[in-house]
Image (cartoon, rainbow, N blue to C red):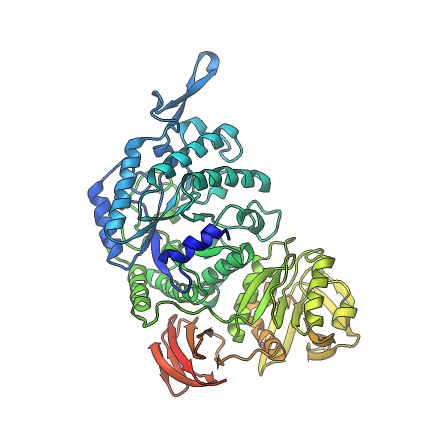
Amino acid sequence: MTILATIFLAASTAFAPGRIATGCNYWASHAGIRMWRDWSPARVERDFDLMASHGIGVVRVFPLWPDFQPLTTDRGWGGRFEGYLQNDGPMKNFAAVDDEMMARFRFVCDAAEKRNIKLVVGLVTGWMSGRMFVPPAFEGVNVVTDPASVVWQSRYVRYFVEHMNDHKAIVAWDFGNECNCMADCDTWQMWLWFHAIGSEIRRADPSRPIVSGLHSMGTDAKAKVNMFSIREHVDVVTTHPYPLWTPNCSFEPLNSLRNGCHAPCETTLYSDLSHRVGIVEEAGSLGPCVASESVAADMMRMQLFGSWAVGVPMYMWWCAFDQDRLDYSPYERINVERELGLFTSDGKPKPTAMEMKKFADFVHSLPFNDLPPRRTDAVVLVGKRENAWIAAQGAWMLSRQAGFDIRYAYACEPLPDSNFYILPSGEGLDAYTRSEQLRLREKVEAGATVLVTLGNGMTLACLKDFAGVETVSFYKKPRKVEFDAEGLHVEFGEPRTRLLSLRGAKCILSDADGNPLMTEFRYGKGKVLLFNGALESNAQIAGWPVYRLAAKIAGVKRRVVSPDPLICLTEHPRPDGSAVIVAINYSDMAKSCSLEIDGCVGAVYRGEIKGTTLSIAPNDAAVFEVTGGE
């Protein structure tokens, strides 16, 4: 993170550590994407009154690119290019920006400021809700790689930011809505676009953070937008965690563990790997064709508490209002874009709007302003040569159920100090280089424990030396994995078969045929735990007892332990020795369980505790204090 970004991110309540701003993305309720042309100041005022009354503290707004820069071309004989025009007339300014639109945007900023709502501004809004919106001059042009297009975008951004950087309602500049969806291009072309646009933002306003605004990013270095490239250009990275469009999600109902964990997991992954603040910039159910409004509210509740617990400072829903009455594209063409609001098109609050208000009211009612950073017990390593999302998500769900918390780190970078590392199931033949493996060996040799899970690829070399086992055979035959661990019987399928023999390691779990399944090996002062299966990629929810066993061997001891894998806890230690506990029930049923507590229960802010028995409503959370103990 840049030094300047550190200063203003810490100073801004919108990005303050330990706090969370709740909000939504906004298009006017009467006009959607056409709000700037079908302009209604009265409707904007009403919309912002409604949003403010429901605890919305931050709103992402979009100056639609062709409305604000109506650039056209002047063509002569034979279609010869003669120059550029502004809306088929002479240029009004160097950037061809419509100043009437700028005045309308300032009105929106004024409306937000009156209600103490902060704005994140998506500058180059050329992609929105499944449709491209570009000035007529660039219809059919690759707007990321075409030099003329990038020049005019740069001028537009400079003009816009220079004319709006005085407004107090604006808290951050966003590159634009999902700009990685605007064109087909490679990593380096996307890098150059970010550099051009980001440089103009910095030039015009060095005082505010830049937000990526991206739909998704890759963990591998070859991805169109990856963690290495984006961190050179932004202060804040974003997730748009829609289960329907994210790999390995939407396998269970929205109000389940996988989808409740999605937003905090993906945002933590992006933040940890990019070394930038991470926010949930767009979240949603994708409407009643996917889930009912009540189920969407259940998912939101889990995601809000989960995001707050892991330190995500902003959570925004897509979007403010339904757009079901609009008869033009993309709403005419794309069914899933019509009913995504917190409010109906006529302003009636949905269960999600009420849920957001309840959460905001709860957080504001707490006697402490900031939630202390959560305790993390293990570092999950990620390789830059593979798309690690599925394995990273699996590690998150397994660790949550097993009762400890993780953070992420690239194996190619200096490893954070930890007593416990996890190297999850690799997919490729070269997921981790020799130097990366040696770096991990040094940590283990010095006393750390590492859990290595063998995936569908070749995760590590030299298993005999490092893990005390030898691969007898590895081939493409599906197998059933069945074993007992932590008092539970576990079964799941593996797409490949790997047979191991012991070469110094101790077998601590065997499959039904007696073959080594989990082994333990002393390496230097530390331990290597190896599991013969792609726990994170294939088993996920079923394999959590292996993670709990590995954490015990690694010496992880928590202040509070839940026996129920669907009641997941985060611990937030305070300087005085007490801790705040956030417990989330990832089940659609009310749950009670007897907790193991090192200390005494103090204040209970949410949920119910009698003795050591915790009770939580369906898809809800409990928040309480623990004092005393070690």
